[in-house]
Length: 547
Image 1: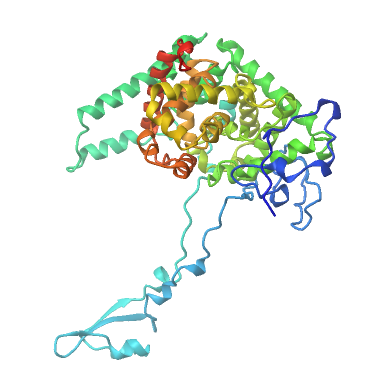
Image 2 (image 1 turned 90 degrees about the vertical axis):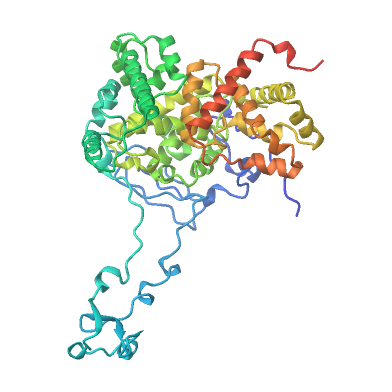
């Protein structure tokens, strides 16, 4: 049977007049199509509903048609169960590793004979060792014996990678949720450097300690100066937005980002006296939206939108532990569904789930002293997790307000951006543009995802967070206008390799770019190149199309 093509419109609209009454028999597999995995359906998804107001039994694996309970909040968030994901692979079983007992000779009576010196001075293995009949009272004088090490080595399990636990949660997490300015008074940055001074003293007293070079001293001095400037800017009674944007363009320190991003997005007001009341009000509004939306359970939801969200959430950031936890997935489901019903012109569109992840990780980092991607959010106090979810929702809403035409019917914003990108690349790298045309490669075949997901499937979340520092500093139109120049610079970066490939090689390469090891340096070089392109071409629109 020939495979069915994907749907022509990869977005889902909300029918305002139906009041979420789509019949389930109208849902087709094509409507759930995703380029990464178009053979999966919601029946494969196993969701553990965390943070629910009442304990809900898990759905039996065979009851594919049984309705799932709707995610609700609860006061008990102690579950640390990892939720199922389509792309997660279990680790090899212990039986696939060689047994330690094969490597260590058996022991008896508390001793193990290792070697024996023969009469001629050569080394050999005692026959008694091979037959395992060693008698401890009659060893030869030249036998080498060691104490039994079986308790240390035999059947030693392979220990898993240590993971952060509740001890990594900041003691003042609840206070930070109520007053983000506490982040500015946090000594030593996010990962804590309380012991840095003592460690430096111990290193300096060591005879092998090499004093830092002048270059390292200058870099450290530069970083300290930038931190002081951020503290001075963010601590003012009324933040100067132009100064904050100027500082943020070159990157925001990790521990200041949870405060700087809401200010740059307009979620928090610039006057300090209004921030606490604004946070309380906005978080309360989001909680009211969640309670109202899920008041009637699953039957009150738009089944078409909810079905697609159920499919996409387990696919979000595959392999990253944070997004494998059920508590994280429940938060993301609520964020996406509430946003979708508040924006009926677009509804939920595949790819919006990716755009929520940087906000969640940034706000989570404010409350833990570890890498947020290694954290199970269920270890956080419930008010803190609720604050992270609400703040992520409002900041995502602010971002999408500027690019909503990317997600309405026919997605005209993406169509327009891809067309302009093709014209721009034709001006700045004509040989590459001509080669792509000669091989029959259309920009829509690879750039659609770059515009739809803002390059989040091409680079890591950490790289994305650094890139969004600059986007937010550029202004409200950066996610549509400046992003066009970033994508163009991103493509031209691979020009030499692409011009040596045929159609198949080009498509495969652009779908799996070698950016796994990218650091802030590569992102900053890309942003610098995009800034140059923006400066040259932004006010020269009439020169885009060749005459």
